[in-house]
Image (cartoon, rainbow, N blue to C red):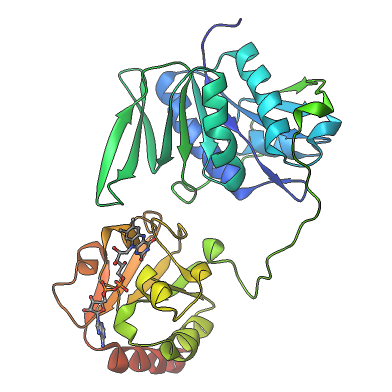
Length: 329
Ligand SMILES: Cc1cc2nc3c(=O)[nH]c(=O)nc-3n(C[C@H](O)[C@H](O)[C@H](O)COP(=O)(O)OP(=O)(O)OC[C@H]3O[C@@H](n4cnc5c(N)ncnc54)[C@H](O)[C@@H]3O)c2cc1C
């Protein structure tokens, strides 16, 4: 077994490309690796990897384990788990980071169990403190955040997406690509993907939007989402989102929800209209650069987090904003 050393990121792919979440994970990993003074590696799995290893190096990796096997054609959790367990046992990383994606949340705890270690779930921030991985994560339904230090090796965390910006791409970075052939037995895969059904996506994905116009219970009904909020979002080339209250009442579908139990977003501007700013809502906004709050209650919690605030009834403020933007355009 090799020395226990380095930070190891589990990469994910989409349509033959390294996905955006893996680049964010590399940014987290780079920070940890620099704190430890140790290398950053990433495992990329598939039946063939194309230009992905070079891309991972350009986004901060020192070493890429290019793990190829016919069984890895689909990002199938059982196959990933078998290959990653073997790789982690051979390479003995000190830290392993997994993205909070459907695949990552599936394989993270299973990998930790196989490596006989613990795992910090749903981490918003990761750092090295006194040589230990310390993860900050929401607890008690998002009302508090706890810092947990990992005491067993390897130190593992599942990290929420949109909690770091990818590093600037640098194609002149150099790194090592190690080809790994795990020789997987097809019997490791205990479930089969019968078909893929793509969720219909109209317009931009909320997770990629630069401008989000979000509404809450204060809007008073579903109509403003379709009318004023959509008009404002269209003018700014943004997307419409909501608090959980608006979803629970049935004004908008769950796909709109931002927060602890909804999506994490990282727009440049996040309009929070008729949203009080509960901690569970703010949990999805840690990556938002500027929050613009519109609320009739000057004491609403959202104003503590907002860069710009307008105290007033949305029925007056939002049409005035739309009018002003139209004039500017
Ligand atoms: C385990 C758990 C998970 C949760 N996960 C999430 C989550 O993922 N996302 C989420 O959003 N919440 C989540 N919640 C719910 C959260 O605690 C809040 O209940 C919710 O965010 C409140 O939504 P809101 O701000 O729209 O409504 P409210 O808190 O009711 O706030 C409405 C706001 O509108 C303002 N307002 C009213 N009328 C007007 C007007 N005419 N003009 C301008 N402002 C007006 C009010 O002053 C008020 O501030 C979760 C809760 C729990 C317990």
